[in-house]
Image (cartoon, rainbow, N blue to C red):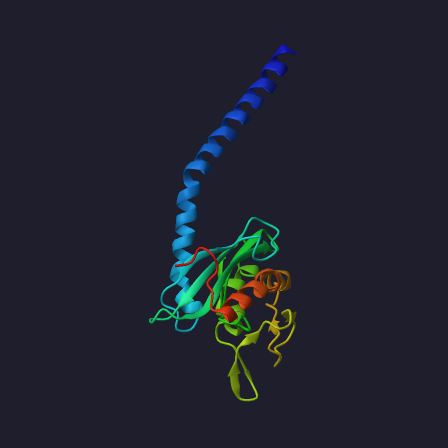
Length: 214
């Protein structure tokens, strides 16, 4: 009996020790991981907003738009003359396997989606991970051909995921074998638009940057 008790205490002590060690590693690597992700986001912004060359990191705080968390990271995209040409919103939500984090490019008036980049995910290899490929992202990044014209996806209605390609500027085709992952990304985009679109449109109309810019 004493041996079992001793073994149990040993397991508990080792578990606590490993937990503390992992927490220490996480605390040490946290700033590095954050900086690497920030650098990756900044490097992608010019591709997500046409003519953007000079992004600035900014914050939308709760007093400007109603958010569930403390704030939502927004990138303010300018052209070579310093004029605002759009926004990039960093957003996240639950996927099929784990959390999915994306960058969403939108026009200055937030009426059009100009780009999408999957910043982080753990979706199933060969299935859900295709959300990070042109197969899924092309309608977001290149638009859709409607009536012989190449047009951008719109934000005036929530995006829907459909089993087949359509001409609608509010619909994207699901990946075969990865419908949940496809729908998860669309839901993240819709949620981000609902949270920040009113504030960004108001500031764009007034010619004002989101607080923290410049």
